[in-house]
Amino acid sequence: EPEVTQTPSHQVTQMGQEVILRCVPISNHLYFYWYRQILGQKVEFLVSFYNNEISEKSEIFDDQFSVERPDGSNFTLKIRSTKLEDSAMYFCASSAWRETSYNEQFFGPGTRLTVL
Amino acid sequence: AQSVSQHNHHVILSEAASLELGCNYSYGGTVNLFWYVQYPGQHLQLLLKYFSGDPLVKGIKGFEAEFIKSKFSFNLRKPSVQWSDTAEYFCAVRGTYKYIFGTGTRLKVLA
Image 1 (cartoon, chains in turn brown, orange):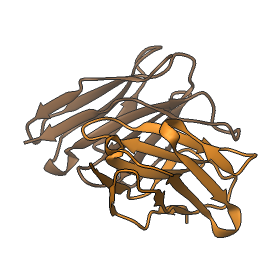
Image 2 (cartoon, one colour):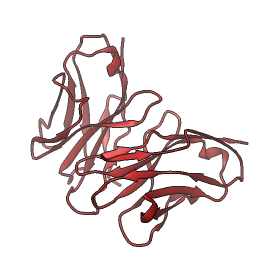
Image 3 (spheres, one colour):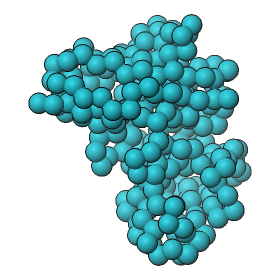
Image 4 (cartoon, chains in turn green, brown):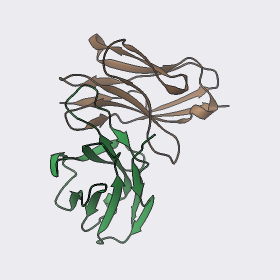
């Protein structure tokens, strides 16, 4: 069964450093998402991406964050200058379509980001 | 505003007890609802989903949920829990571009 994959599974970085989290969505999917979950809290939407453009972003997704689909398979989340409060589990998701009632997002296993 | 409320933040049950976790949503569009489970240290796993049709939805691991439109609810149930059901459970509603998650319910099942 196809699945969303994410690398690395765990990333440790120093405050102020740039990090890139990578995701490989399911191959025929067209819509891509990033969510994050701070330890002990709920899963929060960050951004959705379609046709090489951001469709929607949350208040969390400020200028420090960017997303990119650099090739036909990868979908990346970049945090330019990490802060302590960016420490969280970051989940990538993808879906085949958005508009119909049968949209389902498939989630990856997550990347745990620890900012020291 | 779109939102999901889960009323029970922590639930402790003994094995074989029945489970019901509450979920209420607020969303004006076509409602798609989901329950996810997250075992300690693991990623989100879909338990069940509702798109349309029969409001009683059966999922994996013996879970089921009932969509009650008049109450804006989608409660998760299991007749007899097991120790292995210890996990965190998230209800979610699909918005236009995103899923909106509830705050989660931590379930601990005592052996």
